[in-house]
Image 1 (tube, helix red, strand yellow):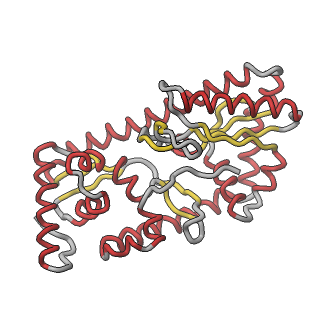
Image 2: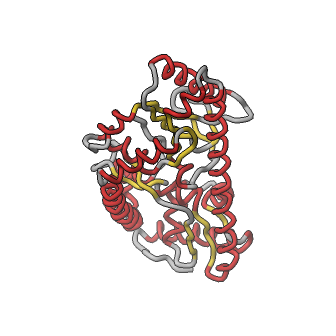
Length: 318
């Protein structure tokens, strides 16, 4: 068993070696495990567990899925990657020993397919609900022609999860990733907008309370003129709105309106700006990871904690 960075007082090094030996024995007995599975079997502090698994040369970590840009007021420059370091370790990483490479590959693929399936199920649920909402409106044809419904967030990246988390306004536990919905309209009357808003809110409340769902809808309704202003990409709210639209997938409504939104994003150079922000966030993420492994006390730094922990993976809508 090899410790990558044997730094610290002898008693601490011995304690860490014993923890690593315990982890190695666990993997020998059970085969490759996710970060969550190891945490449940050891009850180690999550930061300690992440540190030991990444410091032990005998343990191989395999992360799956996509890292994508999230804008966060608590981070300098707003840009960070999602999932956070610990969320990635907990839900999207398989840990194994060197000799378990084939088992680890299979486990990682199974985990990846599970996450894709969760994402597709949430996507299908969102599409079904929004189509029902359109059909129930006094003028469904008018809604169909003058709106487009877009889904963003974890689901759009096939990175949705079912890890229970508290819903922001009520504190009630919901099943993992929320359904981030953007409704864009052009030429709707005030009355139609109010009726649409009321219908979505009723479904939001129903899904939150119903024990068979426990899903959270987070949504915003806005016109194309508002979108145009937000694509100026000035200020935090505008940046978030543009990012959400860039990552968004079409759910239902008028596909031509959706295509027009995407065209304006490209025309405004938004994809390139977001790629630059993601590249910067990736660099800062890797620097933070190295710093945390080199000096565990750096976890006490506020920005390090924000990059490491999933304090709040929800994203504001504007």
